[in-house]
Image (cartoon, rainbow, N blue to C red; front, side, top):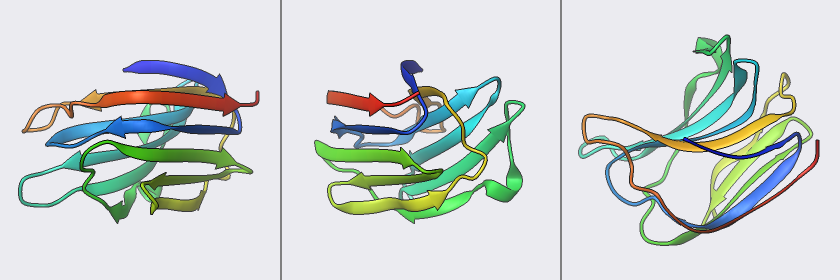
Length: 136
C-alpha cells in the first residue's frame, strides 16, 4: 500500500497499467479507520468487476458494498478519479467505472493505492505518471 496524499475534495489523474490477474484498490477519505474504497479484481473466468464499499471501524459496511461496473484494463490507459461535493467518479480511458456515486458520510482523509492477494496473486500495477490536486 502506498499513501499518496491527504485531502478532502480532490482530483487524481495519470497513466497506469493495471492489466493482468489479481486485485488492487484505491482507498480515499481514510481517517480513524473510516473511508471509502473502489477496488477491482481480475479473474480467469469471472471477468473484471469493479466494486465500491464504505469502511467504518476498519470493517466494510455491507449495505454500501457492491459491484458498480465491469471493465478489463488493458495496456497503459489514462485515468481520472474525482471526489467533490460528496460524490466520487472514476473514468478509465473514457469508460465511466464510477459515475458520481454519492458518499454522504465522506470527509477529509488519506488517499492510498495498493494491491491485495487473490488466488491468482496481487495485481501488478505500473504507474507511468500521477498527479493529485486537492483541498483540505
